[in-house]
Length: 167
Image 1 (cartoon, rainbow, N blue to C red):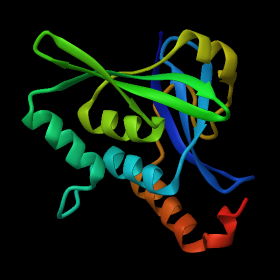
Image 2 (spheres, rainbow, N blue to C red):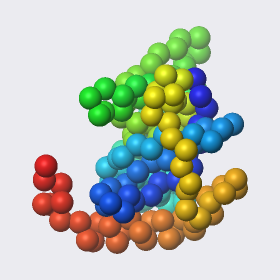
Image 3 (spheres, helix red, strand yellow):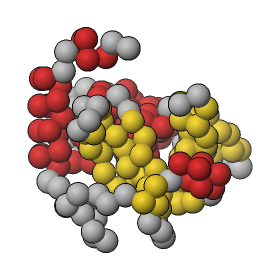
Image 4 (cartoon, rainbow, N blue to C red):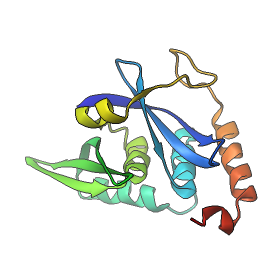
C-alpha cells in the first residue's frame, strides 16, 4: 500500500465537478478521484473545522464509532471497477479487525474527522496515479484558506443546475 495525503479538494474546471487529489506521502504521483458536491463540501467543512448545530452524516458515523470504541486504523482506496473507485474503512475494536466497504469520498470525509491515515493500493496507484502540478502549491501543504475553498464550493452550488447532471 502507498500512503497518501489529501493534497486538495478542487473543482475541475472542464467538468465543473469536485475532485479529491490524493498525493503520495513520499512521492510525486497523485490519484485524482471525482466526487459529489455534498461530499466535497463535507470534506471542506471538516478541513476548516466548521461545526454544525447538529451532526452531519460523516460526523454521526465518527461519533458512533467512538461510542462503540472502534478505531479506524486506516482508509484504503482499493480498486477501480468500471470507472468506479472502491475504498475500505479498516476498523479495529480490541483485537478484532474488520474492513467495511465505502465510497472513497465518504471514507475520506470520515478519515479527515478522525485523523485516520489514507492509503491507496499499490496496483491502483501504479495504474491510475499521475504526475500532477497542483496550482498554488509546491512541496508545502496546500495553503488555500479554508474559507476560500468553502466559498468556491458555495459558488459552484449556486451555479449548478439539475440538467448539469444529465448523462
